[in-house]
Image 1 (cartoon, rainbow, N blue to C red):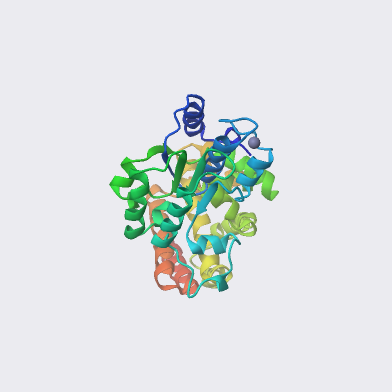
Image 2: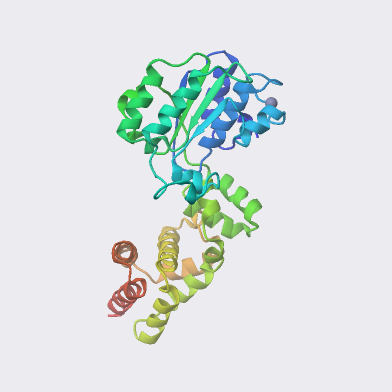
Length: 344
Ligand SMILES: [Zn+2]
C-alpha cells in the first residue's frame, strides 16, 4: 500500500501529497473523521513516504522499509494505541496486563513516546509517531502530549488519528494541521465489500448503506444476517394483527438475543425508509433494490402517517432493547402495537 492507494479520500490525500512534494510537511497532523474510512491507512502511507529510501516523499510501498512500516515493525515509526486496541489487534494478550486492558491512552504511554522521540532516528533521518484513537487520551495524557506539540523534536512528524475531534483539547487541535476524512461513497464501499466478502451486489450495497460510508463498519457487519434480510422483510410484511400467533413467532425468531433483535430492527428501519422512498416515487434510492416490487406494493397501501408510526415504534423498540434487554418481549410489544393498532 501507499498514500496513493488510499481510496475515496481525494482531498485529504491530495493535501498530504502536495505537502510532501513541496517540502512543507507539518510537524503534527490530526487525521479526523469517522471510523473505518481510511485515516489509519493514510497515516501508514504518509509514514512510508517520509521514510522510504527508494522513492523519498512518495513511498514505493514495496521496499523493505515500506513493508516494515505497513506491518508496524519500522524502528522509526512508533505506534501508540490504547491497551485494549492492542489486544483487539492481537499485538498483546490480555495476560500482559494487570487488570482489564485500558480503553484510554495513558499518560505513561505518552511519556514513553516522548523518550523514544528524543532518541535519534535509527534508519531514516525522519521519525514518525502514529497515535491511534487519539481521542481516548485522558486529560493528563493530553497535557503531556501538548509538551511534545509545543517543542517538537526535530525531524519528527506526529500523526494523531481521531474519530472524535471534540474530545481533544483546543490547544492540541490548534497545534495540528487538520486533515478531514469524510464518509466513503456508498458505491466504493459496496464494491470493496463485495470483493472481500464474496457477497451478491444487492447485499453488498445494503451493507454499504447500513455502514454509513464506513468500510470498517461494512466489513464488520454480520453477513449472514444481511443475507437473510429478504426473508425478514417478507415475513414482516406478511404479519397481520388478527394472526397473534404469527406476531409471537416473528418475535421468537428474531428475539433470541440482543444482537439478533437489533440486527432485525436495523433492517426494518432501513426497509421502512425504502417504503417511504417508494411512496415518494424515488425507487432508485432504495437500499433493498431486489425488493423493489414489494416496496412499491407496500407503499401503495400504507399512508405516510403509518410509516412515521412504524419508524417511531421500530426505533422505540431498539432503544428499549439497548436500555433493558428483554429483546423478545420488546419485539412482541412493538409488533402488537404496530399491527393490532393499524388493523383497527
Ligand atoms: Zn519504499
